[in-house]
Amino acid sequence: MSQPSVLAALVSALRGGSIEVVDLTSPLSSSTPVIQLPPEFGQTAVFELAEISRYDDRGPAWYWNNFRSGEHTGTHFDAPNHWVTGKDLDDVASVPAGRLIAPAAVLDFTAEAAENPDFLVEVEHVQRWEAEHGPLPEGGWLLLRTGWDARGHSQEAFLNADETGPHTPGLSPECARWVAQESPVIGLGVETVGTDAGRGHSFDPAFPCHSYLMGSDKYGLTQLQNLAALPATGSVVIAGPLPIVTGSGAPARVLALVERS
Image (cartoon, rainbow, N blue to C red; front, side, top):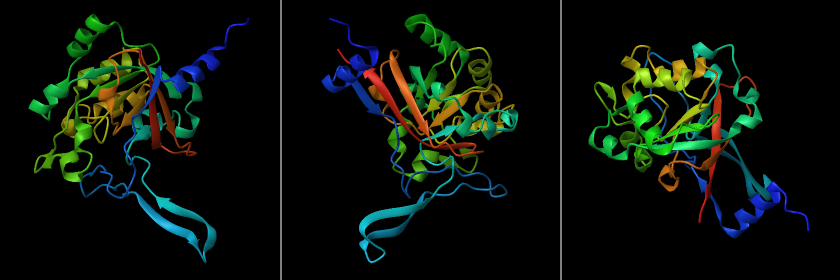
């Protein structure tokens, strides 16, 4: 009797529950938090639905809507051309499909972020994680767990801003450079509104995660949820952004496959 194919085995594992699908996506609605830039800059749109018909005289048997949204609203994918350092690289529709499915490493700094919302991950933190769990996955994702997804119900709590600006955790400039230029991962995933720490505007370079990642032909995933349900290693992320031609990013449904014993 022939052995089942790899894909048949995957389907069987999904149906049997030995592989769990974890949704890492924040629901997208008008209350989804959005980034706020200083007023002299252009602002992203809050997500909006405009009803076309709902089983009525505008369309008796169907319900549908138009929607308006920024590319970088809610759980979304940053393409390389999002930043000036990657302006000549891929738009979101040109990202190779094979790079949208990749293994993940989950680094947990929930306790540190709870104590200090401006907590920054340094290269040494990542190297200590590698000493315990092994190297970051080649062609995979580095997912930063900080517990920030618990704040997703509130624009104010999520941005955590005062007169000096937002206060959210992230990578230090040197760690951002290292992840982009020396680590084997293809991108960084975070629970916060953007890949950079809240104080990233004041770093050198400003917004170093964007600057280094996009310039290195790598990607960002933001406003992820449920990273607590993933193991430190062994999960596989499926990131599905809308393929907007010339787009700098797009809202995405992000899933993780996790093997359960």
